[in-house]
Image 1 (cartoon, rainbow, N blue to C red):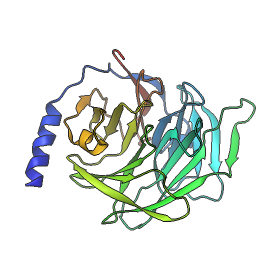
Image 2 (image 1 turned 90 degrees about the vertical axis):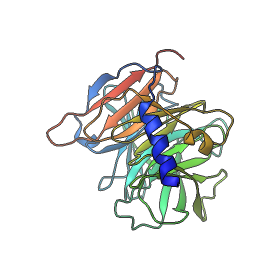
Image 3 (image 1 turned 135 degrees about the vertical axis):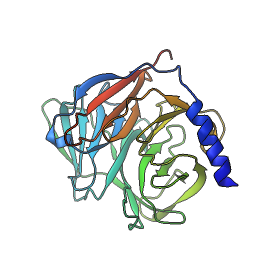
Image 4 (image 1 turned 60 degrees about the vertical axis):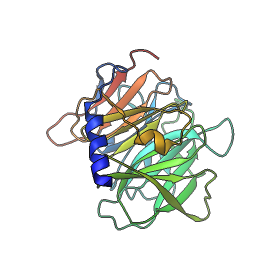
Length: 286
């Protein structure tokens, strides 16, 4: 019965259309060898107009601040940390009021063999043009497991209204939404609660808007969009989304809203023989 309901919801979603955003604009080609496996994207708050990104497994524990021409302006290296499989990133509130934090999600698990996942949280730096590299030694590690089975996950988002963290599974249909309610310990191992099934597959990225009133989510084929009301987020996401305008990328695994709400960005990993770009999809009206 659940399968039939989910299939019906998926069919409805595929017929939806969006008049909210315009066609994507190619801002810059990905040419830097340092960004060849970009797997996450988040709009900076402390550095307006810039974005945070990172590579996935097999690369260094580096978080890059880039401009809209894909120039690396700052490299932040997390001290004594391994990039097991970093798959998403977010910027949002944290433990100290008035400060912004970067959340790096070491949550990928292609073979579903790691019981524990980590989110690294550090205070968002402000770019100093005289300093191109910094080592981050002060950060929190949020360690957790998923309720139920061990699964691959690639999408993380932080709700700016209540600081809850949400993780979405990838390699199944339906996918499942998991929640870590704030405040979450940085000393204990937590369990992310499974709160709902969603009728999609291969979800690779997600984001809340800065005001918490919108959610965006993507797989390799589509970008989905919801307006958030006062209902629990699980109920919102079970509703029919808009299917946003999206130019399919070679291996597009990153999406984020612009911090000012003016549109959304996507970014792809580099694939041999194909070009990848940073795209921006402007909003028609706010």
